[in-house]
Image (tube, rainbow over all chains, first blue to last red; front, side, top):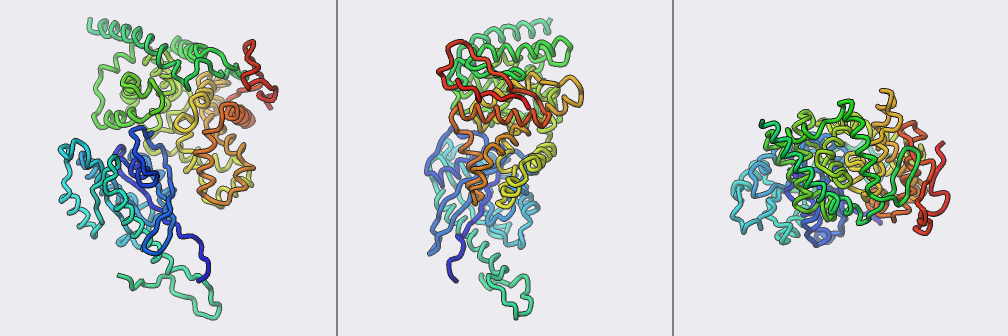
Length: 207
Length: 332
C-alpha cells in the first residue's frame, strides 16, 4: 500500500485529581518533572513520535481534569481513543478504588466497538514517596484487580524519578497500535465496485 | 461573647493580611506595580495597582450596603465551620498548584489564603462546593484585594450577582451550553473550518470560561475581564444582568475570531488547538491588550457588558508602547 496517512494513536489518561497524570505525560514526552504544574482544567494534550517495533507512530496523549464532575465533558475527549491509561496514587487507596468508576465511565462515554477487548493500562504512580513507606495499595492487590478485568497491564511508576515511565508508555503505544490496526481492518482502504458489500466487521484472527 | 472574639480575631487577621497583601500579593501581579484598568468604556493605562483594588472594593461596598454581598463577619464565622473532608481535600490539592509561578500565591501564606476563601465559599454554597477552576478565580481576586474577606465577598458577588455560579454546578450543563454557544457565535466560515478539523470549543475554551482566562492568559489580561465583570456594566435590569453574566463567552468569541486568518491557514487539529491554547496566551502584553480590547468590543457588539471606547493615559506614558490611537476602539 503506497504512502498512507501517518498513524495517529490517541491515548487518554484518566484518574483522580492529583495522582500525577500531568507529571507522567510530561515526564514521558518532555523528559522532565516539575512540582510546579498547574491543576488541569478541562484537558490538555501532548504528542510524541514513537517507534513501535518497525513502525513510527504519533502518539497523541490526552491529559484530563481529575475532578469527578468533569467526567461529563469526557465524551468530547474520549472519542476515537485507542488506549486508556488509568492512573492512581499508590499512597491513597481511594484513588485506587475509583479506578473502577473511571474505567466504567470511559467505556460508557467512549463506547468503543469492542468494549471487552479495549486496551487499558494501569499505572500506580508516586512509588517514590517516603521510599515506599507511605504505600497503601500493594502491587499484588493492584495486579489482582487488573487480572480480574481481563489482564490489564500494570506498572508501578514514579513520574518524579522517571521510574518505569518509558516502559509503561511503550506498552501503551503497542496496545494502542494493536487496537488501532484491528479497527482499521473494518474500514476498506479501496472500494471494489464489483464486490458484494463487505461485512462491516471482519473478525480479527490475531491473538 | 464568643461572637465578639471571633470578630476581633477576624479584624486582626484583616490587619495582618492588609500588610502582607500590599507587600507581596498586589505587587506580585505580573511583577509590575501598574495595571491597565478597564472602567466601563474606558481603559486607564499604566495606573497604580491600587486603583484596581479601589475599583473592586467600591463595587463590594456598594453591594454590601444593600446586603447583597457578605460582610467580613460572615466570612470569619465561616472559617470556624467544618467542611466535609472530601471537599476540603479537593480544594487542598488544587491550592498547591494554582499560579505556580506567582511569588505570593505559590507561597504557604498565599496557598492558605486561597484555601480559606474556597473553603468558606464551599460552606456557603453546598450545591456547588468546589469546582476546579474556581481556584484560579480566587487566586486572581486575592492578588488585587487586600483581605481574604474581600476576596470572599468578591467571589460571592461574581458567583451570585454576575451569574458565574451556574457554570460551576456539578453537572457542568451551563459550561456545555456556553461552549455550544461559542461555536454558534463564531464567523460561519471559521466555525466550519474548526469543526471540520474537530477543534471543538470544549478542547480549547473550557479552561478560559472556568477560570475567567486566568489559568491560560497572563494576570493582566484576566484581571481586565474581571474589571468588567465586577463593575457589572449595564447590570441594572435582570435581563441585562443575565447577559453580563456571559461576558467570558463573547470574550472567547472575540479571541477566536481575532485569530480567524491564522486559523484558516491551519489544516491540522493539533496546530489549531495548540495555537489557541499555547501560542495566543503567550503573545506580548501590547498585543494581548489589543486582543482583549477587540474582544470586549465583540462583547459590546453582542450586547453583553460594555467596555473600551476611550483611552486615558497618565502623563508621560506615551513612550511605553501603549501610545498610538488605534489602541482604543470606539464602541459600535
